[in-house]
Length: 602
Image (cartoon, rainbow, N blue to C red; front, side, top):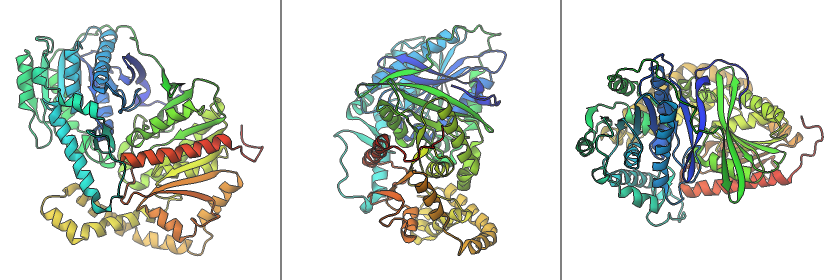
């Protein structure tokens, strides 16, 4: 599904679905942009938080390779991203392996005359080796941060989960539901006991890699951690020519912070130099389009759901999303799920994927979409480093444009629009300007009506935290990274420059009618419900309470999930389950409700 004709670098990307027993695999193919084709590449992602954090790096890596003549396919493993399946299902390791085999086979058909290189990041590299054992015809391997044993990777995941639990400390809510015995949780992603056990059994030394199949392998180190020598020895034993190189930027691009993620250009260059040591094929012949499909069919709790890509052109290029549609007659209600800050369309811990499919099974078409510069949408991702960039007016205009298109194409006349953090702000303001929005579902919004000093107040809180004796003690012991400290100091300098203008603006607005009161009155008048879901320690909750917006009779419906700690991104699994329940309540309510006005736009 496309609209418009804006020129953007994402225009050439082909979304596709690959059949891999038992789950359909979502992929994005970047065709080579150079006259001569070199090896075709498959990028296998890491797991969990590393998968979410590294998405921008993997996207840029694919663009980089395609520009140099390497057609490149990116995939989401089953139970992750936009692929079929769920993490909790049995047989995940086998399905992940089958997905990689299917992706390699697709590249073999689509690019028949060039070698196939698989780039595996962390766990993705270990799964790629398992796929080779299962018959994937791979010529070269690039493995970044990959361990020779699955048990070593699981230990790292456990350690990360333990650090998160320790950070919660005594503030954690007593008695959250325990995980299943043997499960591992880190970053809000849960590795089921059966999956954990299957991964712990993987040992490259005993995989039985077929000799002479893989010709070359490049092992890239992680920041401050050498490449796994045992992995190199196992590959050499299978007749592979092994090289090692530094892999700078792993921490900042794979396991860092979504808003400050860095693209590892130095590692791209190292990899390209190694790949380009093999001469290019002179105008290699392209094969058929391969077996990839343009949509996929899903069974969701016994109901049929189909998904397909949704591409929409705006000033900054193209927006990219995935539309889940009911297999039967749709309701007149449609849901639009917006980005959670800089996180791509799948939402926090893949919650938007799960919700969209569940609602489509109830008859509600549901679109999860990337706005400009996020996920696979065109735009300038560097702009997201400053929080104020999330609140620029054009984002709301893009949301309204998408709603208009969905109305025109018959996906609904009434809309639920939802988002987390800045996405909640977009949802609220789109509802103000578009009467077809019958419900705005806002999760941990930072602000409903953005003002420049909101960012400054947040910076003040950060500086107070940094100035505390406890924080400086940690800093002197080396327990705190220097980058966040430097960022906070730069923000403080910027705030000092902005302070005079902000003070004048606050004085000017003092005594003016409450804009939020007027906005809520407007929404109530047009029959739009506003539901806010807050976890603990959200500043806006306290601000709304002090202003009297949370009293009985308020136009706002507020749900409070008591977490005992800051859970802004909804990472603890039990919090995700509770928010899912509250989100479903809003959808069910709107399915039963009919707007009182008869003049809703058509």
